[in-house]
Length: 186
Image (cartoon, rainbow, N blue to C red; front, side, top):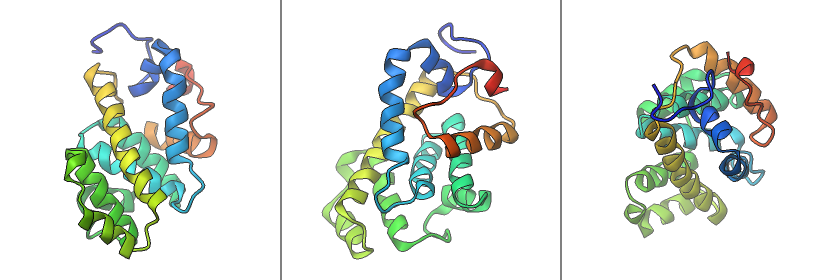
């Protein structure tokens, strides 16, 4: 049960965004800029970083919805999403993405843990400064989003089909025009 009175039928961050539309707008703009960026990293790779950080934070809603979005972008590859969450170093992803996930993992713990060797490793794997920047900001932003969702004890469905269905919509439409009505979330 949420710690504050939220609109019924809206899971995770959705109810919070309806509750505070003035903060929802910039948060959606940030999510869209980070996860739908057109520079180099694919939307699937960006969503994998968000999913990975959300799994580290044990945020069921965020790791499930962004995992579903990532899977959609990656050709409905839920096994790859699970593999990244379980052990990204052994997952079938590029060395560049592994180096960016290592940076994201360090940011999740403390931004001060990222050191020059992490950056050099990412550069050796052909990561650009923009990709390194975005990995850090995705990790930082999703730590905030996860704490927002869990800190107010939002309702988080257990049914994977909910996330698959909603993940396809988000993958297709992005984050700027999300419908937040209760019927769309059932």
